Image (cartoon, rainbow, N blue to C red; front, side, top):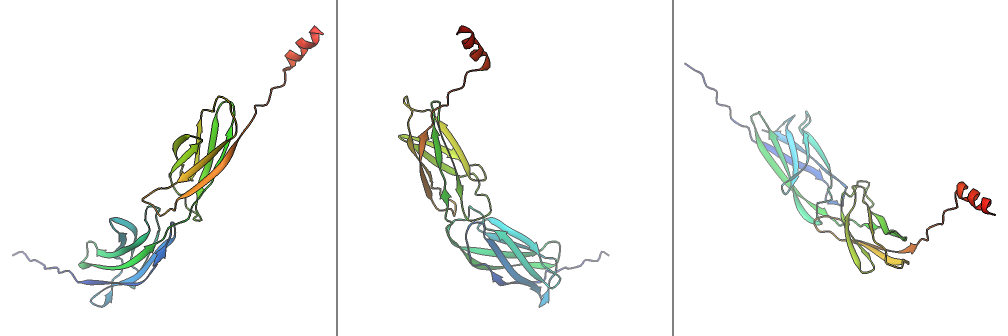
Amino acid sequence: ATATTDVRSTNSTLRIDDSTDRVAFDDPIIVTGEVRAAAVPVPAVDVTVRTGGSALATTRTEPDGSFRAVARTPVTMTPGTRTITVRASGSGRAIGVSRASTTLTVVETATELGVSGTVTDSAIRVSGRLTTDATAEVGTRPITVRIENETLEVRTDPDGRYRVSTEPPADPEAVTVTATYNESGTSLAPSRGEATAEYQVAESQPPSAGAESAVSGLL
């Protein structure tokens, strides 16, 4: 005869003890709590913190059943109040899945958009940088640059820097340039910068030594 063993899953309970309730871009999101089964702490259980369909952080419970999950607020987490779900799963163990939830408020993050430019006989060049108070990079963000009546679209590098150039007018002179950041789907606030791109006269090159000798020989 073949013996069979009926392994039944034990219900578990996940409790959130504390959690961050308000964040801006790059702020830490910290969730702490405990997982128990039949009133006994459950160690080495996977714990995942999620919002919507995205996982923010994963960790495992300690020997006493406690956990501490830490994540950084991504730039794509838009302002507003959202539900944070914490899920414990004892994969490969007779421990049932348990969940708990809390709320998190995401606030808008102020940005500053720098802009500067130069005008020469060959090009109008504009550059600048999009920054926040956060230490993390803002990632590639869209910038609209307007030079007189011309509008140019450019994306920053991951560090927020951008650069663009265009043809100068027939008679180069100083022009006003503006740069604007206004993007949906992020927590970054719109910003605008303006500057005067001054006309830079090309410096005349001094004659070469050979040319000077030729001129001297003619005198």
